[in-house]
Image (cartoon, rainbow, N blue to C red; front, side):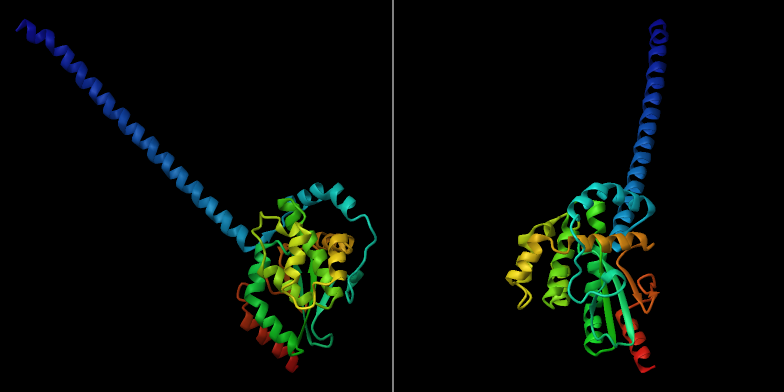
Length: 273
């Protein structure tokens, strides 16, 4: 009997320890479950941010300040020469490159960055419709070139590609080269367009563009100051990001119901009067 009583307390202690261990395990499981839920929520937020970033290149107030601060000295040094507009540029300060019949009843104004993924998405979706309408003489397009991604991501590919596109305008090959640049757009973080050799190599895809004059224009950065002035106009214009697309002054890129078919319908209705 005595040995049984002496053994009783240890059994009580073991049960107590076991219960504490089970409680500790439950607490640990609860903490692990909570941590997993936090990780899931964080991953979901990350995916939403990535998707949002791929839909539009957002230019908020902080981004504007960042672009100005990041490029304050650099752009002045790189664009210190005279502002040389490409052949045929028009609009205020000759900052627009026109494509299509000047007498067309509708005007599409497009602000684009050759490194911007959302701009490529817009071009891929609307390219054939825009070509159809410009070739029919119903639509003229005024392209404004922007260097937003250079400021946000670093590098000089936006500026170099814009200068090369302006050089192509001198050869009357802007529209074709513009399309080639977007079709061959590198990843947003890849500053491949910063290389003159890359831009010249892509010019070979446009018949008659790879000339000595074009190469010299690209390598010398002939229109660099003009590109900087165009980007300055974009920053001062109060635009929400790239692309910014306006049909006869109305922001159609902000219209979520807009489709290539709807754009065509609007332009053709305008042409009919």
